[in-house]
Length: 604
Image (tube, rainbow, N blue to C red):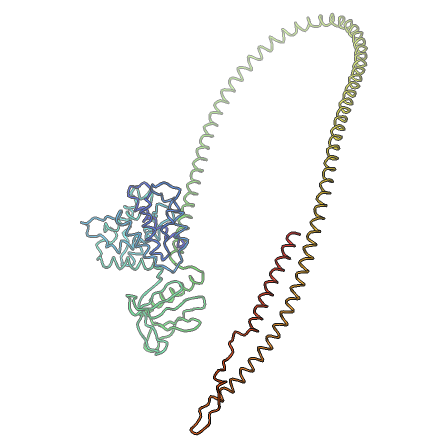
């Protein structure tokens, strides 16, 4: 049973809880709320418009479970990732919806289970129920679950009460529903006056074992890896992992040991004041532990080996595997029962067939006896009739001898006459055959003449049609030749125009290249002047800085009137502007030439 099937079982209860009228349909507004809550607990993004778009073609009425399933699979379950959500929260959401409508225990009953225990039993029911809807649990699975609970409470199951409850018509026909199962648990027939706390602890233990995949849990002494001291820890074993906590409330986890095919368990001798020791070896570490007694050590080592085996086989749950095995055993028993019933029916049919054949045999014997008596009577009558007939035949024989002699004489005469008639018939038949042959030849000649006439007519008509087609093809050929000559003349004229345009574009390109060469020479001259000017500026700047140094008392200040009017040339040099202008003209000429050339080629 995969994760999708487990989720669908819980969601089915949530959907049916919203069906207040029990019509099999739920309104879209309620489905929106249910879908939003499912997306929240499953930790997936919720699309509020998806439901409306999915049912856009439907009317505004309610939606059935079959109509909701495609939306649920596409927009919710396909996005679910295992390990990204807590399944217990999904179960709690669906239990809250369905318990308000369906779970109504009697208030005066002292054996009513608390809400948490009822929720745990509901989850256990979903886990062990069959994979078909409406969900039911077969009596064998109910008995297995009750035995596990009674074992946790250290009591024996009262099979008489269970058989009385199973003997009801509704249970025999359909199996246990979750509400009939909870009613049986609330009746107190299973717990038999046990303390409520003990019952709750047993339900919690069975819930953690079956639903929570806990193979075993309990206190063990563990030796530390660094300080090498012994501390008592609460261990929880699941397929693939062995976690240990400070106490049994499992709030403070101290570590987690991954289990794989490379792990092994070994029993150790007693030492360091500890007894019933064993160790768990992994590839990286060795964990030493001590149990309370030899039985606990054996149970822990066997459980750890089972967890390693399940992880190696790729199985995530022991009870899922056990459930499938129990289902296969039930199916085998059912097949065996059906085979026995079929064999018994065949045996009964054979027995009935045997009795029927014996009765038929007796009837046949009686009929044979009666037939023998009738046969003897018939034989007597036949003998009498035979004697009478023999006498009559002797008389008739004598009369027949006399008549035969006279008839033989007549036959001789008639044979002679018949021989003459046969010869005449043969002559007539020969004449008829010759006449028929001549007639057939004449008919065949006329048919051949008619065939030749039809063939000649067909050939003449076919020759006329071919002549018409030939004349039409000749006209089309002449028209095509004239059209081709016109197109050839137009293409020749267009090629001459394009050639002249290309020569004009090449001439313009040569002029642009000459202009560019002259502009490049001007730019080089301007650059040379610019370098000369910058050298002069640097020289005059050095002279000016030297002359602008402070003059001491009594020193003569040289006349610097000309320097006071000296100005540093602006960076906007005429040579630089000339170069920029030439480059711009060059770019424009290139663009014009390129555009003209491309235009000419497009016309070509």
